[in-house]
Image (tube, rainbow, N blue to C red; front, side, top):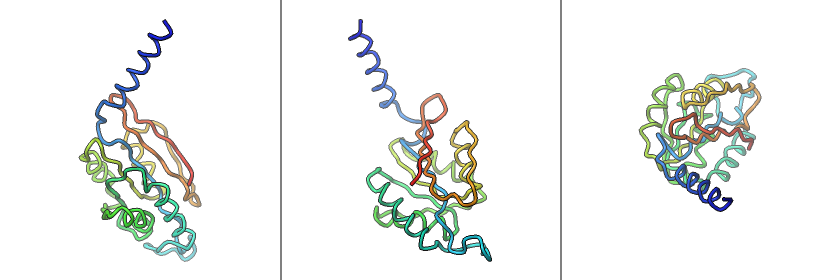
Length: 168
């Protein structure tokens, strides 16, 4: 009986991994790294601070072997700068999407192949919207001084995606 149960569980798990996802294998979603203006005399399109550039390098180190096939960022320097080190190391282009058009971003992601692994850099107000649009049922908030979240979204056929919130 125990052996039958083990075989049944194994086959179920293999079937879950073999079934094509409705979008990609995984989507990594991050908020941009630390801004150079740190909120003081805020400009509409600041570069990353030294801490932000270091965080962008850590993100690149972390995701370098994750099988990333596409990298998206909003049109702002801080989001592009957050994912640029990873894109450069992988020989990919950062695809820019308007920050105000989350639905267009989601449509582009959904057109990806089931085997794709996607990285998206957004903002404290767009990351929760992106996660919700990807099917995450849990509300997400990101504090103004919180730059270290890495959300991992794994689509699952016929149900809400698995979403992990990590720190990097």
